[in-house]
Amino acid sequence: MHIDPISPSSEQEIPLFPLNVVLFPGGILPLHIFEQRYKLMIQFCVENQSPFGVVLIKDGEEVGGHAEPHRVGTAVQIVEIDRLEDGRMNLITSGQYRFEIIEIQRDQSYLVAKVRVPSLIEIENHENLESITAEADELYQNYESLLEQLLILWKTPETIPSVPRHLAYQIGMRLQIPLEEKQQLLEMFPVDQLLKREIVVLKRETYKFKLQLAAPNN
Image (cartoon, rainbow, N blue to C red):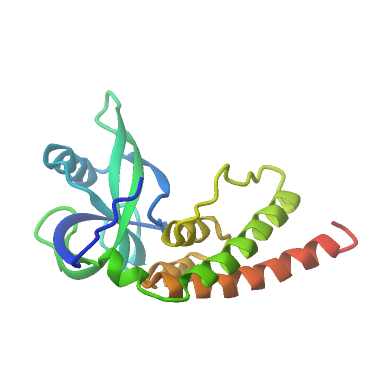
């Protein structure tokens, strides 16, 4: 499920969860909550029906201490909570929409940020989006097929979205590339720019995979 803001762009305040993860809207992210500060954060989100932001760590550690996040992340909705006897929690969360951090507040045990959420009109306003989407879709399906040949446990998704932004988000989630490069994709808000960059990456990775499949010891 995608909650895409239509118009205009908006600002809101949400808790942040810095992780060594790059999540796109539409992605499912299981989480194990054991630190006290994040137990409090989840409690706040449940009581206030608030999303929280998943952001890639720029500097610092996931567990304990201070973590500095990148400026763009994805807001997630909690869809399932399994509360354990000792207070720990297992969550299933769903990526909803991208945001850009405007300001971080550090007066609580967990980070809270004022964020800007671009509107759907802002991210999708491009006249050549249909042709760009068609090229990306073809390359992406070929990419998934090659990965199925290379990786025994790799399974192609049952459905590939036709909506440009949803296709771009799925490609972003499925690309097997370094986190920093994924973060660069996440930060490209206009969907045409995101798809164009993904086309470049898909061509590069496809060429690499074809070389691997053609290797004598494959």
